[in-house]
Image 1: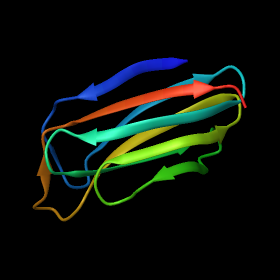
Image 2 (image 1 turned 45 degrees about the vertical axis):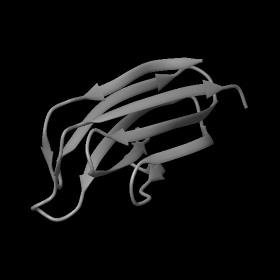
Image 3 (image 1 turned 60 degrees about the horizontal axis):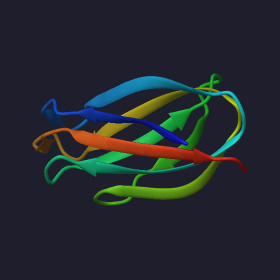
Image 4 (image 1 turned 90 degrees about the vertical axis):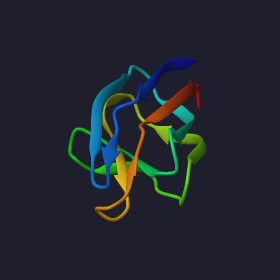
Length: 101
């Protein structure tokens, strides 16, 4: 199932974090992409309600992952612009979808 695209065109500097919550009512396999609006390097993390990081995508450049298993529940999603304090970017587009395990 597709999840609404999360897009943020706000200019960001290194260390900027955009965060939101997402809830899954059943266990899922999560796939997606995180694409920078410019040349920046965004990273993605999911945290469970205990504050434990359960998904982390931090490759250099755009992120892409397939079938990451997540249990039913509420998660805090953080999108971080990685780099030095002189790095900046024009925002990002986060696309996600789920399938049943």
